[in-house]
Length: 282
Ligand SMILES: Cc1ncc(COP(=O)(O)O)c(C=O)c1O
Image 1 (cartoon, helix red, strand yellow):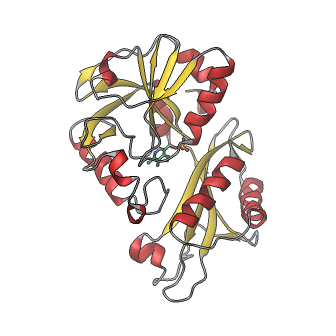
Image 2 (image 1 turned 120 degrees about the horizontal axis):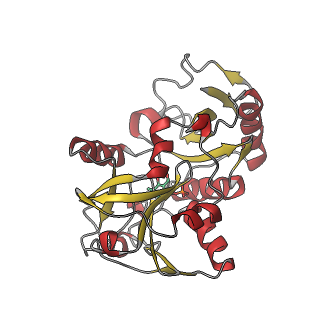
Image 3 (image 1 turned 135 degrees about the horizontal axis):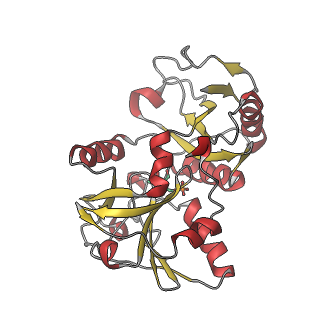
């Protein structure tokens, strides 16, 4: 892994970078972004920097300017000497910094796209798990940080571990109103005929990959909708997908242990998202 601070200085990835009292560690108090670098170019970098700023505003955290982030990002990109066609996962991390210091800790990392993540582009088995709230309910509770991409992902990771303990790979959260919310690290999209549907933004992260898909799909003649749907649709829709910046497009092939086919227009969606070729001859 490559690590750089926003002054453009590289740091050894096996040496500590944070102070022990950094509230990012003590309380998960911070925000982050993840994107994929293909052929040395980060995908949707403007959008990720913009969302980092939105998340920071939601937790009342002052961030350095985008130019400073770009200095750290450039240092990581330059230090990356990829294997041919190897894709890199780029992370931007900002914590509130050492306790009582009022100076955020900001850094950028780059590392190889994990093989298991990449393999999900061929299919992912998901488990539906209750999230314990409805999207519309928490959208009016800003202290619950609906839609902020914060470092407090312990619940999201616990949900994925639970799914794995049941033999699945990932999760789709369902709200108390019975409608689908999102995955712990992904947006849910259904494809039926030439219509793509994703849940409304209420209470969930405003996914950048789904925005990119919808913009490209509309130009290609698809209809796109943000509308509530219930979990049965994950099995009955022609295609069901998890979308996220590193995986990009993962067709759901099993829901709670029941197999479902890969949607017939999956290759078209992959092309609309400019899904990069499989690295390392996969
Ligand atoms: C909770 C959550 N929802 C959705 C997404 C997908 O968002 P994006 O497409 O911007 O990566 C992510 C990405 O990590 C996420 O953490």
